[in-house]
Image 1 (cartoon, one colour):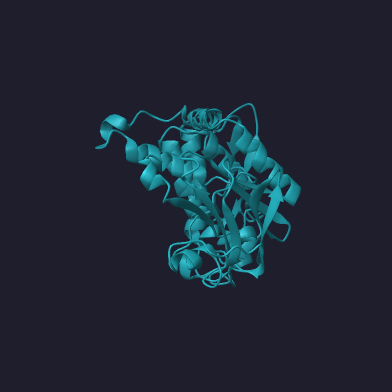
Image 2 (cartoon, one colour):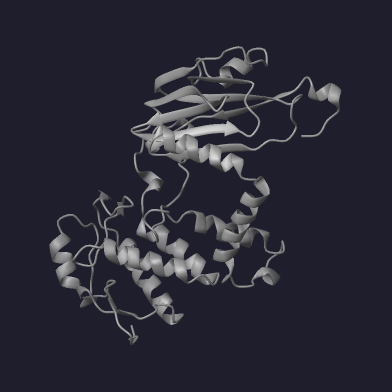
Length: 326
């Protein structure tokens, strides 16, 4: 930050973090701890830990309950950080750290996660010890690596490709890092700031095959074949024996809503066909999974729709050195 010394000596900047660990706002625990001569802000829920600090030590640090004793509530009354609480447990909490700009005008803020306090804090401090420029170069290299196959559609855009590039990267960011190939419908929740932990549980944080296939097809249209193929294989491993899919499901394949929607069953077939048309199945072949009558008879009691015709070509993948025709 740049300003005259007279202005800087009056300014302080605050880092405010409201942890929602294990996909929940309630039941979080926050603490201020001391390590290596500086204050670290940490939070925990059900064994998952988060740690936050800056390359320049916080001049003040506090944890509190949102709307009651958190940093935002404190600063809203007089624009000064007066409270310094060292713990807030089992609630909807926020962590606040103050940086005195009269002492430094450049700093790095870091957040790290781990399955223990030791792992989260060690990862945090190790990350802050590495020069920011080196971290930034690695970050850029990783994005460029996944962007290497993107089609050059910039000449057809009205903004030089800015929206195209941002959209491509947004879709890539939706791929789960644990269950590769899986994409939830959205990383956000509509009106999330007004939703409790159990309001609309699941929702867009689930895999909906329709939304996932549309994301995969968007990436395929942009020239990315690796992610859509991973998505197809993930879906093939998640489908029922009759070739259908649960209406939506968690990343590990566990059904959330068990209804049947025709588009949820049909769109993965379109993804398989598009990958085959692009020559991107890489040795996997497609075969019919079951007859349409069998699919209907086993689900008719719960299904709202009827499948007409003699066969339902669901995704059934088999690895072979020879590609077949759909």
